[in-house]
Image (cartoon, rainbow, N blue to C red; front, top):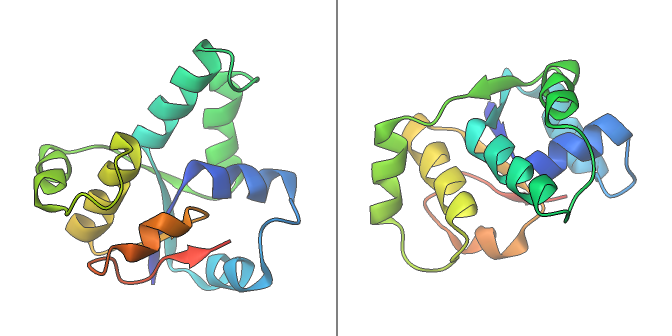
Length: 127
């Protein structure tokens, strides 16, 4: 199984946070590959610039590699996939993650329970 990991899961992995459930840890441990989207990095940088999150964008990007995750670029096919999604979730970054997962046949691992309503994603686990 190949995963697309949302940025909060990545941060929880780095912090060894208790919010990361045993089932999520098992899925991460047994994944063939795991990616973090460039869109997630962009979202976090925006939140840092607005003062909603503290930290360094460079350290965050280094943390992706330190977690063993690879970067998933945003392709035009991913962006176009957003047009096919029902309006279940309105956050543009989360919608892009769902579209990326669909387009690249990835399993999206996220803490956002609302995203579980997208039936077109193979599996979304609440961490």
